[in-house]
Image 1 (cartoon, one colour):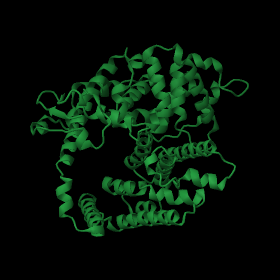
Image 2 (cartoon, rainbow, N blue to C red):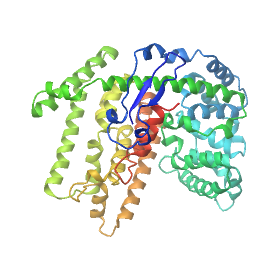
Image 3 (cartoon, one colour):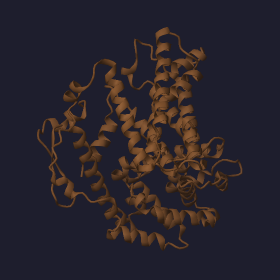
Length: 485
């Protein structure tokens, strides 16, 4: 799709004009430079507004005042925060959100004193997301004498939605949340045919992409929140903030793409050294550049840590190469231990840790070297999703060397379906471990744990291949994020 961005100085609304109507109907061709031919005028920069400017806008002030003034109305505050998060604008209200939720936590909110499933579930999820532990036993009051969730709860659709969302923050051993997920999922699927279009769409998206395991930046524009909060005056202000915020982010992303597109790969390749020197030189220069940037900003030289991380990745690749070369598969446990490193997640998160500069202490650097659960959990999620075999182009001569293959070798009685089911269970367990780290780990800064969480959220989108080995879902979301108004 050849596109020309006609960027105006008027209210942050870059127009997209297809230069070829026939091509604009197709969105499945390869690389970005060929798919999105973006020409951006220099006036774009002057049209950008900085994030700090947005916080002074009228509607932002209105919402902040509203949230500060909720008083004893805990449900109103919870609903406002839920809407902020789903619209991906909660970062504008971090101080107000933290103050409200901390107060709820310290005073042991009235949500626990009522038998309202919607309020209790929302309270549970938001406080856990904020790092405040809430016991899942609060949901016991919604069970009957048989210790099962009361079937009468099925009439409360909002309660079912929030119970399902709350269950996504479970950690190991919390059986009641596993039961809550199974119960709410069953009810919501049964209710789909009886809901109106907006409600059905919201429920379907919730089941497919629960909020905690999804990236709101991709779903904020398509969230059908009107039926939930549309009658509240504060929701109108939130929508206005969201519109301004989306326009800002879209402009920033477009500018980033333009900067990337200015790099001529053919010219650059001609200037690089030959053969293996190419890889080494680029890696060497990039690592030193990043180290210098971290030192300038945060006063810490991470060069030794980055070298160690790259070394561990190369060693993991070498181990896999030896396995492939010998034609012998390792045990599933041995494979996954090495696969957590070869996934590359460790490389990414170590760089993020140093570049953020938050919680940058000698003790935390030593923890990073040992690949703590905050890193190994998303790495496990990525490795196992990759190994489920959605990307068939990665198979080599019929031997994919995946965790599934190793598992079936360890258990000769396993069929492929049984092995894949075990993999999904292991992914679920990794999510529980990640939830626990985000909830209880006090060593790393929240910005770093959020980065780890977002990486795990991105994984399903990265591996949602169709029969043509393309990613229509991810492509559609990126197109919406970058171009649609």
